[in-house]
Structure formats: C-alpha cells, structure tokens
Image (cartoon, rainbow, N blue to C red; front, side):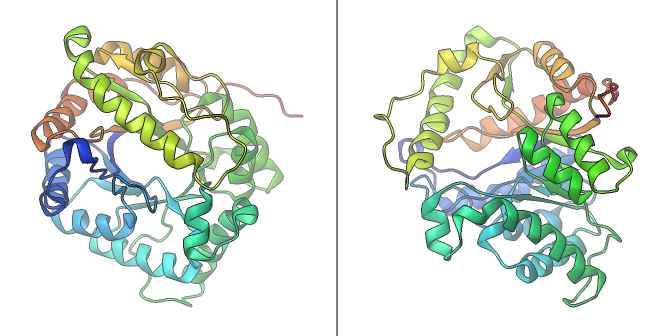
Length: 336
C-alpha cells in the first residue's frame, strides 16, 4: 500500500497566513514527506473559494518536482472539463519531465456552477467531457500532437469518480479509479470488461477522510475547530449556483466524527483516532478491492506550518507502516 499526503492550500480568514509563506512552505513539506519515507504528495483544484483553495494543481506540483527525487506527485483532481485536453497534456508532460517520471494525473468532472461559468464550460456535459479529456490526452501523447512527451511511457491517469456509475466509466476507459471504496470494485471491474480490458490492470486508490492522534480526546477540541472550517467551507461553496436548496446548516464536527461512509459517493464522514484505529478502518474500507494507493490530509484549513509538518511525520512514522502491511486483495465479484 502506497501512502501519501494531500494539500488544498486553503487559507481561511480566521487563521490567515501570509500567502507567500504558505506557498513557500509547500516545497519544504514535500521534501519532508519524502525524507520521512512517504510515497506520494497529492493536490487538488477549485476556483473562487473565499479561503483561496488551490486553483492550479499542476503548477504547484512543478515546485514539488524540483525539490524532490522519489515521491510521486498526483492531482486529486484536476477539474478536467474546465481545461482543454492539449493544455492538460502539455502541463502534465512538463511536470512529468521535471519529476523524472513521477506524475499521477487524476481527472475529475467537477460540480460547481460558478467554476463552469468562469471557464465557459458546460456543467451538464461534465461527465462525458471528463471521459473525453482522458481519451484525448492519451491520443495527444501517443501521436506526439503536443510536445514534449512525458518521461513515463504511460502516465497513470486516475479517474476521480466516487460512485458506481463513475467506477464503471473509469473501467470502460481502461484507466485507474481514484476511489478507495471497495464497494466500487464490482462496478469498476464490470466497466473494464465492457471496455475490453483485462481486469488484472485494475488499480484503485484515493483519499481517506481521517486524522491520527496518539491522544484523540486531548487533541479533538483543536482538530474539531479546523475540521468545522473545512466542512463548512465545502458545504457553503458547494451550494453556490444551485437554487431551491434548504437553508444552510453548519456542520457539527462531532456528528461528522461519529459517521462512517454511508452512500457509495459519500465523503461525509471523518475518522479521528489512533493510527491503529485508522488503519483498521482502512483495512475494512478497502477489503476485497485492488486498492494500492491512499492519501490523507496533510493539513486542515488554518493549521500552522509546524502542526502540518508534525502531522506529515505522524502519517509517515505511525500510520504508513501499519497500512503497508495491508496487501491489496481482490474478492470475487459477480460476472453478470
């Protein structure tokens, strides 16, 4: 099991840091992740968030590529329908070259109307467009229609779909699935077969909504505040552009902590506990599926650089050794 950390670079007003310092610390944190033995650094994309959510993941990864030697660098995700395929193919190739062939390109469909309006993209066609981007990027690289070519002969493309329909789409494309939920394996496998792909090529991975502590009850009051900031920011910005929604209700972090994934697309949960408790959750959540890549929050919004660095070390030294003992396993699934 490969284990990494995940950054979104949010900078909320309540704990606002100098943006130059915040971004300047990122390459150093990537170096620390590599020094501590982690396998991956993943970043993400949104636009127009009031807390300055990261808008350009591949640009940020270029800075990590120049400061690291081994750790893999992933997007989770680039919102592909907001960008042209040629643009993504070129940017990804440059990051892959800068890193010596360490890029994992995660593509997602997006969901926020203001972002699609900003880029003049079609929200209604986002799933088909996302699939088309993956196909076209492969074509552009294979035919050298864009240059330079990536360092890797086949850059891993991960389709950022969390539910069964998306898992099937990823399978039909013959790409990897950026979901660590074992419940999606049956649908992903079915899509691989529909697309004429050997299911043995399957790979699944993704983010786990979790945080570790050697003393959860001592640390919960602090984590609770930052988790509330994160969850409420997602909820507020996710509502923008939609009409007829019920009044906004702030998230209760204690309720979030008590939940485990419910629906097949749910990220509305949070596992907070010791490294052993989080590892046990991961074992159950991924059991029976070809999950070999995981990443965890490096930071929750507003955390200091020192706290983030301490968390990166904790993930590397306390959690990762437990997760690496988990062998990806594939349970039998129905063939019809």
